[in-house]
Amino acid sequence: MTQYWVIIPAAGAGKRMASAIPKQYLTLNQRTILDVTIANFLSHPQILGVAVGVSPNDEHWAKSEWATHPQVIRYDGGTERAETVLNGLQVLLAVGVDETANVLVHDAARPLVTHDALTRIMAHDGSEGALLAIPCKDTLKLANETTQSIGTVDRSAIWQAQTPQKFPLMALLEGLSTALEENLAITDESSAMELLGWQPALIEGEATNLKITVPEDLVMANAILASQTHTQQ
Ligand SMILES: Nc1ccn([C@@H]2O[C@H](COP(=O)(O)OP(=O)(O)OP(=O)(O)O)[C@@H](O)[C@H]2O)c(=O)n1
Ligand SMILES: C[C@](O)(CO)[C@H](O)COP(=O)(O)O
Image (cartoon, rainbow, N blue to C red; front, side, top):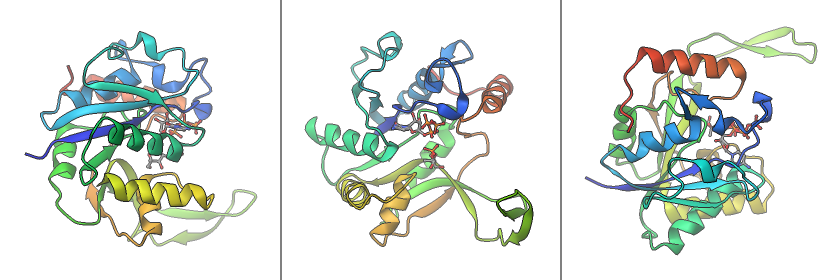
């Protein structure tokens, strides 16, 4: 079975969470969100190691249960997510990861991804990359500047992107470098690859793989964790 390195961007400030500490260090079932995320990956047999991008002035990483683990590399993230991921790709090259290898990129703020979903995206053998995503289930409204509905968007072709996202290391490095050089506001890896003309596969994920962004997401994540057995070590 193919084995993978994972880049976990964890250098964000968590502004929308409005918490005293960056949200990736908030507690989920007596562990930090970041430690739960790392545990989820390192407990999967196809994961070789994790490169975690944290803020250069991060004061919390040293207390992580993974801070000294041999399969975990800490590196300096950037001011934007794309920069943090790009720095991670450079780190993987520096430690000898093959340029042709596919790598996974996964938000630190998504601790509940299941091994089943990880196995499915790693098993996907398409040539244009892949990402976990979920088809839109709600009716979508278009809002005007006073938050009134001015129309309904056809949701039949709308999917919500999640992570992990999987791309060849060097291709992703080119995509992110291009997007950053052109000052393009990209919020995930697949949008950078689409700029190069790639059409990555959408691999259906799970609604429980939520990104913890605002306080109510943490309430939901705790409820999901309490109701499901996640394979974590
Ligand atoms: N410069 C940045 C910005 C974000 N991230 C990471 O990208 C993931 C998804 O981003 P998001 O949920 O937006 O996190 P934040 O940027 O921290 O949140 P906010 O936008 O509310 O500040 C998070 O794990 C976050 O730590 C990162 O590594 N480097
Ligand atoms: C990568 C991502 O989680 C896919 O939905 C999302 O784009 C991250 O966006 P954010 O604004 O950095 O949270």
